Length: 167
Image 1: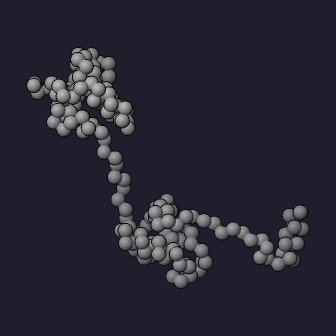
Image 2: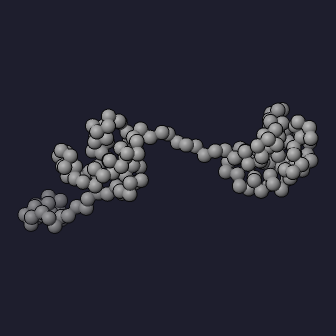
Image 3: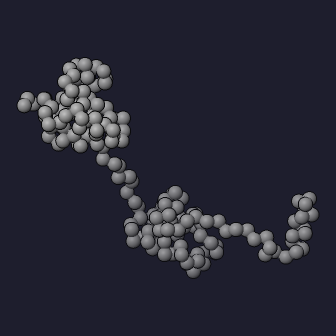
């Protein structure tokens, strides 16, 4: 087998099946080019029809022969690294289950900004509100707003409000 010749065990059917599983256009294009080559089409025709560079197909053939056709799937991204450790995130989750007043805050309910302040004071780490809400979500805590209970105010306040608003 020559250096830039596709391994005969890699059939067009293998590349066609992999092309259907591809997650991106780049992956589909690689598998299609290799499928065409395995089918016996001319390299120059494949390069021209798919808009490939002169050496691209040759490097794909070498990779398919050495690592197998599955090597063309792109690895999923890892995402950014967390500023807070897992232990720190668990500590925040446990603290949020208690009242903010127990930690010396004046508010009676937690909100995103207050949790951000707590993270900054406890760990010296600044984070966005989105990060705060992701930490809460992963900890099984949903963002909630307290419901307004108008029945808790006295009758005079209700009447004053109705008069002012014209109801």
